[in-house]
Amino acid sequence: MVLDQSFVKNSVWKSDIFKGKVVFVTGGAGSICRVQVEALVLLGADAAIIGRNKEKTDKAADEIRTLRPGAKVISCPNIDVRDVKSVKSAVDATVAELGRIDFVIAGAAGNFLSDFNHLSTNAFKSVVDIDLLGSYNTAKATFTELRKTKGSFLFVSATLHYYGVPFQIHVGAAKAGVDALSNALAVELGPLGIRSNVIAPGTIEGTEGVKRLVKIDDRTVSKVPLQRLGTTRDIAEATVFLFSDAASYITGTTVIVDGANWHTGSGI
Ligand code: HXC
Image (cartoon, rainbow, N blue to C red):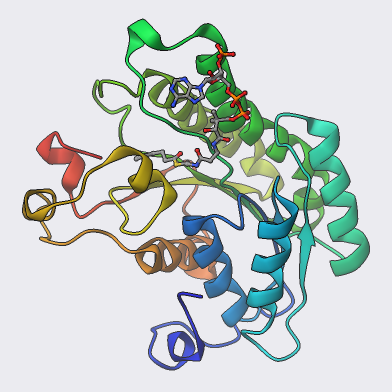
């Protein structure tokens, strides 16, 4: 657990701003999305954690449930975002148990380093299918519920497609698509009262992505203009803002949470 009750006591947010709201999160047992959910639950939301691995997904739900007395946090394991029917079954379970969906975080992602020469077509397709098709399937499967609640989509992207990052062709292509998906959803679904935004994390310490991609040393940190790595709490704070009423006129945009790192040309 990264967050606890001190997040409520020592933060700028009111403790019950998400009371009565339900968040549906793919990749919710992973390092970044899990803390996004911790923050939302601490601030009053109920949650459905969607994941492929049963043990990991159940454990995340069980732990997050303890954060707030009365919190309802359900586990939807064995769900593959590459299959829209699989995601829809998680939506049905969420509505049956929690009654509604207000916020959707599409966070399930896959990544590994590979140069173009050794990246097979199937490897490229696997990441595009998880990151981009998976985000589309998540939006598709939850749309009917968000339409009822005038809810909000949040896609977890990256900054590495803002310029050419070697060994990340598959992820860069997928995340560029995720950004485009969100922008188009914002325009098309705005008249229904549905917002759609993207968070682009920079180098966030302790995450699966960073473990797979970056060797952290003093130089990594000193190159970041804010002179520190990002934290999962930084991403959670931005998430709370984007789902809050304070962001009610913010849609079709990307909030980059990276300490200005991508401007230096070393975005991961
Ligand atoms: C080259 C690789 C590879 C590697 C897998 N493949 N790993 N190729 N280098 N290290 C190839 C396989 O050989 C295969 O191609 C194809 O990819 C599919 O592999 P599978 O293992 O069958 O796929 P699957 O089980 O679906 O696994 C998907 C995965 C895996 C993406 C490959 O790594 C995964 O499940 N990851 C989920 C967790 C994760 O990655 N989290 C980090 C997210 S961080 P062939 O041709 O042999 O059939 C993140 C941050 C992004 O997204 C932004 C950073 C700043």
